[in-house]
Image (cartoon, rainbow over all chains, first blue to last red; front, side, top):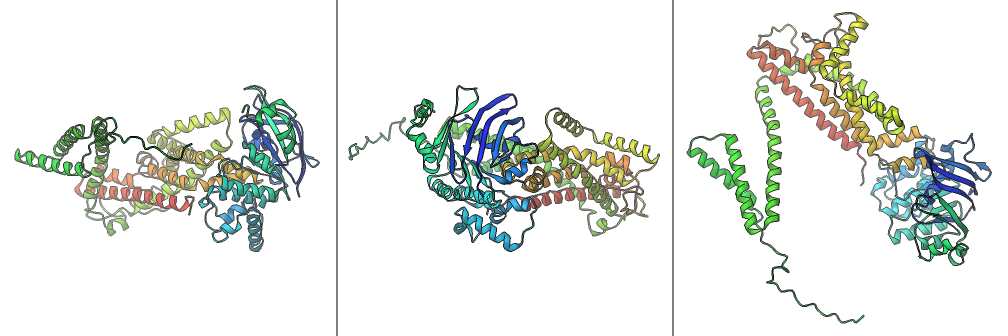
Length: 259
Length: 359
């Protein structure tokens, strides 16, 4: 199920502005890869190019290669809609659909695409996804209540359940805990540990402790100067990045000397 | 850090710079004062035997404001006195704005009730001479419902789809051009819209062919820009997050629009459409030109013959000038006002029905 992502020579532009320059990296399957770096260094932008979400922003485009196992997702015949059903995404702000119940939110991926599904199949998928997101016990008695009535942390786990219900092979998370309290953050981090058995997970975070806690590998992004494009500075085992970084810039960032 | 905490010296309660308290007028003071002012002013005016509702309201308001601000400045200080002054002014402005509306409703109900009954609502003017004490408005209700209904059927799809295009797809020059022309359309005088359709009908069907459909199209011309504008605002209110959440599930753009964006904004869209209907339901000029002003019998067919409508009925009855005609005009005006109010209530109910729920 989980797939490897190979990025080579990727540039991301907003119109004429080069936002991220020449990124090459390998993201291993069944592991958690964290992107760290200061605000505006392009890590979220880069994350969004991994499932072609950046194309939603007018003027944004990417050049280079992103291989999902062996398939180039920027290939001529590849449909971005299909890419996104294979590479799911969880956003900074929990965004359950306000018109839908908890139940309908979970199976939104199927419902919105008019997939035919029997009642028992749908029930099974909802329970499986909610259990997978550690949310089942909390909501099983109120499945048909609106999703927006849940707490922030529960909403974020609902969004994770919704993302996993379409059975992607990769899950991209864009600062999924930045709006949550420590308890809810812990719940999401536990969930990430569990999810990495089945998925390739990429997480953008501002919280270095979080990167250290949840990830196997860490990539550090930085800008050479304000207004210059963001770059991948260094990538390696999380342990190594946080204890023996190879680049001076990385060390400065993780020790809090700047950023 | 030592565990013992030393109590800071208690602030001198008497010293003015440490005292956070200030004088306060009693809670009920403004209300009591207002009633008192009203009674005193009424008494004084009665004594001079020159009581008039406008003069009374004006003097009451002025005396109330003067007393409350002076008292507040003395007891509560300058900032609160200003607050009381501005509060009074805001309330006065509100009452001033309400006055014409209340007066209008009072007049319409007062004059309209004379003839407003089941008979009036259920018979037409067929075979009724203008001066006879008979006849009703049923044919005009039918015409208004048919014409406005068809205008709505024409303008809602065009308007909402234009708004979807503007918000979800359009970029650059074309977007600016369309927005500009929608704005221009908003400003078209209604009689010009009527003339336009008359000319169009003349070209298509030859002279003398007035019917309800022509009226519906002239109303649609007026309604489309209103629907576009309000729908555009409503669609813009749908957070980008929701669209991205849908895309991230592998849902194509058109399904995202039909199944996420439109349902999320359904309440607002409905309210906007209802307001647009209310805006055109009282249009008179284009209907006189297009649907005719002399129909007296019930006509459900938009494509055949003249069609009466409530505003045109009011206009033509009023122009005849007899006492019974005035009564009919006012009763029809009451019918029209009630119809519009019903639409607003309906808009609220539907809006609440569609609104995203949180519990």
